[in-house]
Structures are given as C-alpha cells and as structure tokens.
Length: 66
Image (cartoon, rainbow, N blue to C red; front, side, top):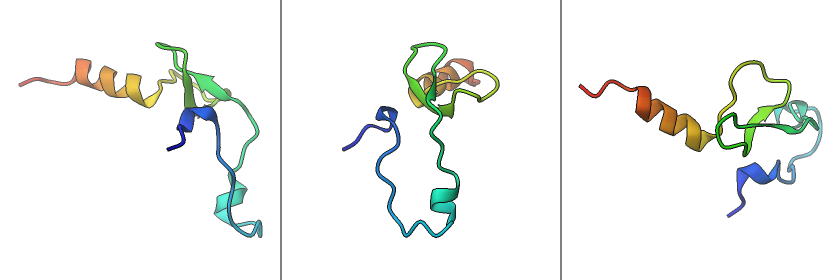
C-alpha cells in the first residue's frame, strides 16, 4: 500500500484534459505545523496545514464530550 505522503503516484488516463490531469501540480507539499510531515496541501496553501493524523487528533481534543 502506497503512503500518500510520499507524493503523488503515477497518473493514469489518456491525458486529454480530463479533470484527472487538469489539477496536477508540481508544487511540493506543505509540512504539517505540528509534526512536520508532508500534508496533502501545496506549499502555497494559506492557513494552518495539518496532516490527516494531526487534524484528526486536533478534532478529538477540541470536540465536545458531552
């Protein structure tokens, strides 16, 4: 199983301008502000960038328990 944090995998498709290839970016991924692992957002993304694990943990900490 490939880890999404290793970067985008090989693209499949015909390359005819479908949405599959239209959103492709060569920009590196932003680092998580908590653990510094790559996120799914590009470096140009504004605001706090969290990896999915840290985002889930942050949601658990801030959720209402009752």
